[in-house]
Length: 519
Ligand code: ADP
Ligand code: ZN
Image 1 (tube, helix red, strand yellow):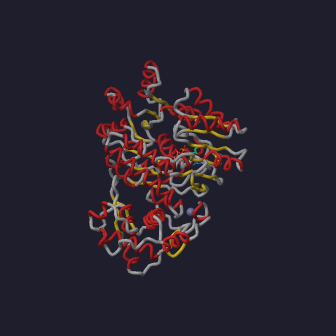
Image 2 (cartoon, rainbow, N blue to C red; image 1 turned 60 degrees about the horizontal axis):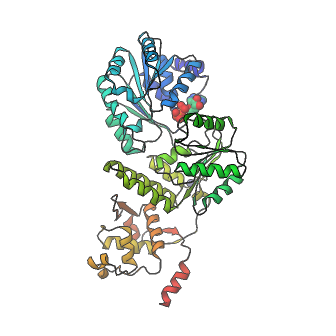
Image 3 (cartoon, rainbow, N blue to C red; image 1 turned 90 degrees about the vertical axis):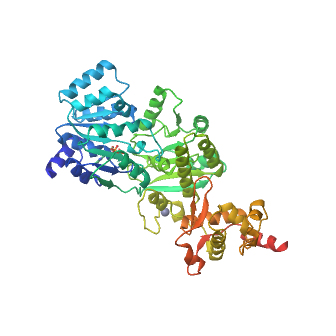
């Protein structure tokens, strides 16, 4: 078998080696069993079903939401001598009929379809007339409402499973958290399956968060050192995209916009000019990038806050595909966070809303943290990262000055305990600060031993400490809309004085302490 796999790799794809996990995955698929492939963008997912497709008797059906890319994929395969075709809404009925004939006659090995097709009964019947050896579900996180890219059409896949109980299913994604992963497995009813999880660690990417204050000026500073390099700047809205692209052109940069409001021709043209290196910078909304394979993107800048870690990871993942050092820079502000919350608030579906809040919360805590960025990202995707210093993120390279925050931590934790672990961050801090507000009076919290014991720090300093203690695992926040602070299994050691806690040194501690004594 080894020889067959390697000779196909060489003959049809022109490669002599597999990327990590590809070979294991292909062996498993060839045994005709279900599987789940988690691989970062650029990890080489396509080969995992394209190569086995050549070795199977029957047809491999690939389900993908990316209609715009199907033609390219199929053209690429055809050039390599692999018979492939696609059927989607862009194909004329007469042509669809011709393609179906080819499929029935066994002339095709790989068929790409959009999930919408599966809603058509006659199409399902047609599929049943074929000998299908494998269903590959690309971007399979789209089936989950808990993912960042839920697409209702993906629900049709459940039906597919019912109609083809014996055909193996291969779910693929670059962005599944453990909960989304579980959801995919349940919904696709994967049985006797194996999970193949390639590392999400992109060692060559440098992660940096910059507090956003004067974003245009900040962007110029970043670009000044990267004049001839290719880069992507992501913005939240079309207007920002247009105006930023325009201003950068004014500074002499070769920059073009990309967003869903431009005509299809314009988008294709701008994208191609970027790939051909006619221009260096593409300023875009998240509409840009799916399936784009440009190896030498040297930086990805987030001008505005992204909505989720999944999205951020995928967008930054477009940098440095060639393995060379590349930068991922995010401009972070709480104002952006509030803007996104406003949009989430408008959502009608309660599940969707909760999922969106959770995703934003995780992203914000990624930005706030004083912990290795890489560690947080990998933790998020359920991957353990135990290296103490990754040496390639801002927090590891420029650690902020710390102080012994044990006493502050003890005060905060014991206050959380005193209020019965059933109040939010602001209330707990108000108690520490000795505030006499309505809520404190109503709950008789003035009587607590922790009332007013934290006046040496300001509210914003306490907020920073609380977030950091959450990051460090000494505190937890539970609940979505009105989260309450809870102690964790690690809190006890701090409260008992058995553990020293290092926190980021606040800036104006000294002056505040003095003004506190003056009163
Ligand atoms: P993904 O879908 O996981 O983002 P792709 O399947 O598009 O990744 O593959 C990313 C790039 O890596 C493509 O250019 C592909 O041709 C290339 N590639 C995949 N497998 C190999 C391999 N074994 N050797 C060399 N290049 C590979
Ligand atoms: Zn790090």
